[in-house]
Length: 374
Image (cartoon, rainbow, N blue to C red):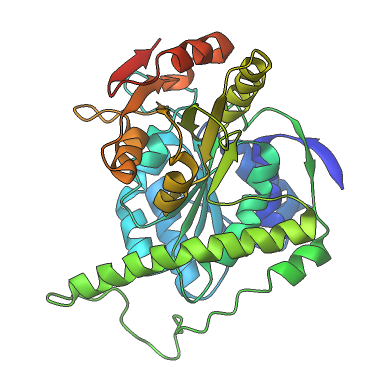
């Protein structure tokens, strides 16, 4: 079934097709329509799930953790300041190795207040132990939610998953989206039946208890689980491509094979960058793009492979770490072991970049500097 739906609608369909059972929620722009869509389906009997309005985003994540601990498949969504309020429970959820699914509809953080998108809200959580996937379009939003459950619930991973889509750019823009048949998804994603011990009133146990010397062992297991997810993401994406014809991975290379200049980017801005690359290639310029789809786990090996023969590299960061610079650029530089990488801070608070600015950025590559593109 093919429909014109928003990114929020696509994310909601991902939860519906995955048969999420518990939906704790609290409204915040621009993600609220995800929860409203799910609420209408539940009210009309089209989705079998419990809808739990909560008093804050902190409570939402607490409820997600509790329900997941009881062995149910859970889902919610948030944005911006709401994700910040969840922070304490984000670390707890990953520390308890709970395969919670959260869609973050990115929005710049206040103050001052903006309703438009950048990536600081999601990237603030990069050290919380959550898997993070950044989507470039609405189809990918739906597909990533379904695939995300398969990855997060795997016994070799068991980590929570955040699917990130750009607020307003994707969340309220309608695009043609292929909605798979429910029977097809049921074969791909069976009902959640965890092999590990779950909370049961008949068999009380302690969860998340106090540890001292053992704390490092738990953290090392989280790290191993994150590393395990790399191969699994590739395998799940390969299986999804065989089923749907839509292929994904940890990264998306675009004309990188013969490129002399490449920009690294994530999120929906990659669509405009692709258009720019097509335009410049018609003029004989050997330019390309590497879109980072996974931010956690960070695809270091894939970055090295894709950029090994590229002469000039730049990174577009729709984020900033004051006192350090672009977050993605810092990690890309670490992967590339000292090679010159030009860091561009752009699109903060949803400020438009556009084709002309991308052309300008390509001309400025080749220097190990940081530039702000206004």
